[in-house]
Image (cartoon, rainbow, N blue to C red; front, side, top):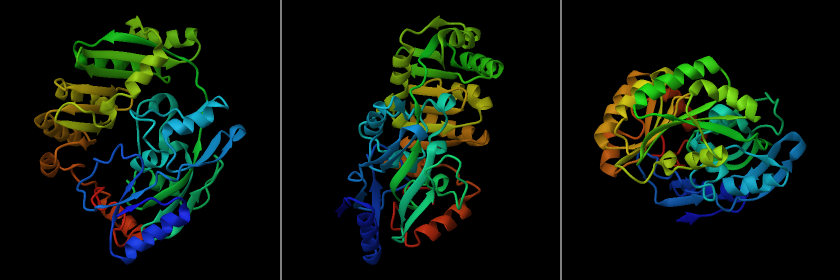
Amino acid sequence: MDLKPEDASGVADAVRTLRAQRRSATVVGGATLIDVAETTKSSDVLSTAALDDIVGHEPADLTITCGSGVTLAALNAALEVSSQTLPMWHPAPEQATVGGLVAFGWTGLGRTLYGPLRDRVLEVHAVTGAGRAVRGGGKVVKNVTGFDLPRLFCGSMGTLGVLVELTIKVQPEPEPLHGVVVDASDPVTATTMARRTLDEVRMPVEALLCRASDGWRLEVFAPGPSTDAETLLAPFGGEPVEEADVRFDAIARAPVLAGGSSGEVGVKIAVPPSAVAELCGTLRGADEAVVDVGSGLVWATVEVATAADARAFVERAGGTLVLQRAPADVRRRLGTWGTPPATLEIMARLRDSFDPDRVLNPGRFVV
């Protein structure tokens, strides 16, 4: 059964119908991250693609309210007329929906320069697995009233409710980027140097270690007037990058960030930044990789054995490794999420409160 409601009441009706029939559904936005799941237990689909209206844009307040089915490309097209943007990148912006990115807790590149997506979600309107409409947050930045539903729903993988409408904090078009490219034939040495230099600079600089068919390279980006950016980048050495904005955009849209298409397994890793250099040693033979040196986030496509070794190292370091793309037998053997977190009981109780009959996204998350 494919459900494609056109408004919030339609979403609530669909969820209540599923619950009454003791059915469950996979909630889908643009389906760019549909493979990230422990198991897929539901053949029914509840799509938010029809919830694609721009509800309101307040340029003076730097906020926009939209349906959860609005794509990232459509959102930025609406903002462009006011010289504003949501500084968020995805390999498939014409397909990825705002609601899907929030539900997944999407973290692409640009986090160091512009902050994480979850800090930009001001208000959410959702329908819980019990079919109840809930709203949390507010259309102003300084709003601390009530339970923080926006942060709760961000990263919940659609297991608490179906996001229907969101208010997002946007910003004026940022300053142009400037960049340098540094030799990284030894990725561990290059990452160690970049970590040390980032600690010394102590300003927003995005240092990206990239692995492609032509080998490893370190590319470092900073925004602002050229004199300021050049001052920030000088300690890294290297050669200037021509058209740095175009180059950054190309890296930020690399398929590897959404699981990739080469290699046996696509992984997303989060480790303390102090562990990044050693992790790069484990990933030395990756097919593709993008390493955000400053934040400790890594995306890579690797062989199964490398994924297993990397997870063991990552969990010892206090991080996580998620299988974004993997054959079913590998997913069963390694697990999508790895060792359950200490907060598993709290997560399960929250899910039971919002979706007691497990109507939404069964098998989609660790709970």
